Image (cartoon, rainbow, N blue to C red; front, top):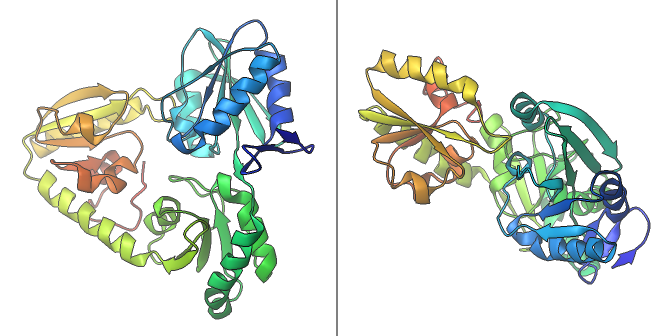
Amino acid sequence: MNNDGELTEIMEGSFLLPLRNIEELANEYGKGGKLLIETPLGFKGVGLELARYLSNKGFNVYLSGRNVWGACDFSMVSDYRLIIHLGHALPLNIFRIINNNLRVIGQKHNGDVISVEIGNNSHVVFAPVYYKPQPELLVRLRETAGGIVETNPGMLVAYASPYRLYASEIAGMFDLPIAQGPMTGCFIQFPISSPVLFVGSGYFYPLTFKLLRPRTTVYLLDVFRNMVEDVEHVYRRYLAMKVRMLDEFRNAKLVGIVISRKPGQLRQDLVNPLIKKMRELGKDFVIIELDEVSPDFINNLPVDAVINTACPRVGIDDLDRFIKPVVNAGDILKTNTLDLNNLLVW
């Protein structure tokens, strides 16, 4: 590790981590107990390096092997003094759900790192992992994005947390405004303008803009594939799957209302309204609890259709992997089920 002050290089300079701030919080909350480090699959190497570092500092560290999909998905295991959750921003909507479920006692910002104290005397640290901008990639990205920027002057540069440094470089290259903070797959903390240049990789994050405000023009500048494209065609494909699922749901007789125990996804407050709605529609129902609302589990449930109360992206991104209709709670509780202007009603 090469510690240059605010951020520390990890894995031969591929990533940057706010190591000093994490270590300060580990010293404050983690001494004398077990620490758990958890990351998305793509950041397991970073988690391993952090585990080694803290172990050498005398901490009793474990590295979680499970994938975590967002800040909503951190572990709640009582025998860990501190959970260090790497790689995800903590949006306001998820913080509110965590607070409802776990009673947040305190919250502290330490640079880029957020620590949350919850009701059972445990602490969760949410720390970013940043891709370190590589000069050769930036040269190619400048060439790739030049045409789009020229035809869309003043477009907003947006990013998810791991791509913050790349987004800052791109915004500086073209003298473009940059979003005031990171976005997630279910929350955007700034006004949505059009057009948007999302700096990152894959369709998951840029589609958030379309799902919240369909008329927004969103370009994906893919850092690692070195390409730029309008994501409208992908949004249209997802929209078609959503309409099909809503249509098939109408024929379901037995419906599973699925809740997740993940601390930032558990929505018990939706259960009674959904029960009332199922009775109005004349459908039988059963309430099903799952840790992971995934096709592997849903496809084997003995029901005709499923209402998902967990992450709303389950009822959008994974629809082509389900063999039975899956809709989100927000789809069913809307006054007009076919109102597709905001697919992230939660």
